[in-house]
Image 1: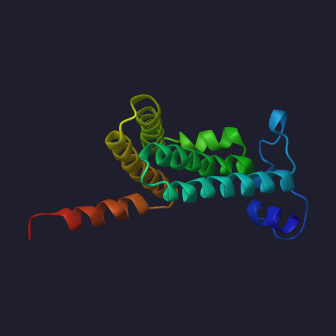
Image 2: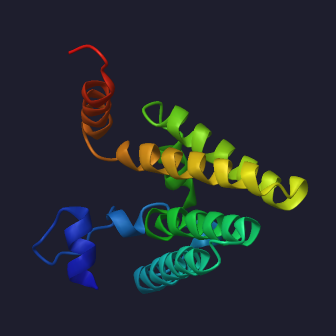
Length: 163
């Protein structure tokens, strides 16, 4: 575990570093050891991926699909909070670079749940899930340098009607 901690902190000489990636912000109510954080991350990510997989089984029932898929997405994205802590996770999500993408994703999650739980409209639920998937992709691209710009340029070239 020390090698993994050294890898994330940028060190490799085996020295104890107090400001490592996995130990930042670990004080307070969320004081977990590095091992507990890794187990929490793995369990949350695995549960989220399992829920997303199970949602494909009930794809014909849009309301159940929306619930499983949405909760799976939230668990998978929230799993990284175990690694860096909830405060840093929120700071990264609402960083000015990805504020709009995060807001749209959260809005799509809320709309999908409203369509599935309150409105019970299959068509609106499917549309909301499609918007949620697109927002999740755009949000995920915000973590890769220049990815959103590259995808935007590709889409403009593919959808350009002038030859």
